[in-house]
Length: 427
Image (cartoon, rainbow, N blue to C red; front, top):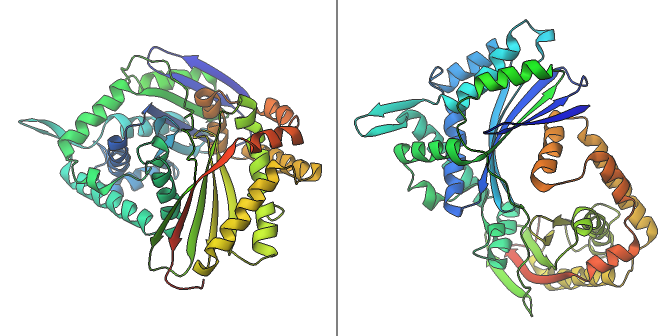
């Protein structure tokens, strides 16, 4: 695999050459500082651009064209990466070696048209998105926002973070907000879309068995619509605010069978080595799988939960523990979780636990190389988060010691206990 970054006036082009895949993937990312009331707009733009274009004015016509392009696959997504919001559009298609000459150019043009030639209407008062497509996209996003609220697991995690830091980026809902959606109209959304093209930091990733000069030429021709002046990016990482002296307990009730318990921990200032490597080892030992302390001692030995796991979020300097429980076991489960976290500080884990965590980490890295999307995410991490390359990661994870894990454990402090209490004691 050969990687090359080409910086232009308006964007960065990342070319990843490999003969491992029969397909080529092109991904275009638009990135800007996260603003709460823009999250819904960005999700709407994704829906709008993927719904129709100037040439293909319905989803059906879009689908027919993808079939003509040998089942080209396209999608859009929006996610929050620490301080930044990243909106991405990508296409995956067969290398023309397996189709016909010219399909590379046509497939990339499809992506370009999707982004730069939307389905719009010109009126006396200006330009707006096509109203029919706008309504379809609006209803799709509305349903998605509602469904995310109706998912108890997802809802409990979000509510834990909202109660932990109500006005912080870590509490923002990536799906968006109904109240913000109701304020959006097709004309204002088009204005915001234009600001994205003219203001966002833009990165283009291309992976496959490709010719570097040819791909650069095609990208230059198809993405000349990017006029923004390339700006430097700040760090994505968010420093944790001070932990409460006494942890906050929040209990909400919902008509569900299984109660959802979430414990939110804040982590004191971590070193770069701790947030990139030690936290992975710590979280795996604590609650990363069937060999973890939480799984063995809370779930298996005491039969107190249906599932339990811990997740470290280095970008946000937090760690959360999630469990599905009977409401009657709330206090006992919480007490046992606190005990296992305390035991980590006291070093009540073995070098064998550390070795298993390292092996799992290394295996997960090796799996990245089997998927084009994951490889792009790897290089996006290097670009956005200053992450190490794979070879460096393999070396550094093996440097983590028991002392390192205990030192990090001393920086992890409970901030909130959140329970979404069900109305029965059963699955």
